[in-house]
Image 1 (cartoon, rainbow, N blue to C red):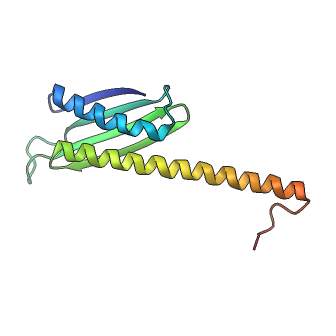
Image 2: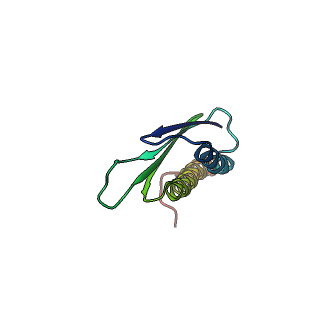
Image 3: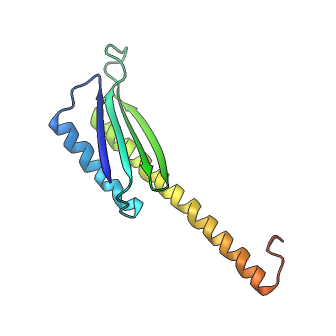
Length: 125
């Protein structure tokens, strides 16, 4: 997976870049090691002078090879925002994977019922 990191209203330090790369690399195992996938990561401050202090934002958008998953998080700490967005991406990817498996199973059930000679669109008990 290719990782593109963009910083908005903050300086992209080596420590932030390494942390983002480490966290996004953990996500890779949920996408069946697809080399065509691209992770667009954006980290930064939402405002310069916020009422409750600095507010940091982290976004991840994974595209390519049939994937289109997006998550964003805002926290008072940049590293906490990155952790939360990583967890959200994992949750979204598992949900997407479950939808695909359910659709495949449902399709297989229809084909199996047609082979048996049953009405595949009739509700099963």
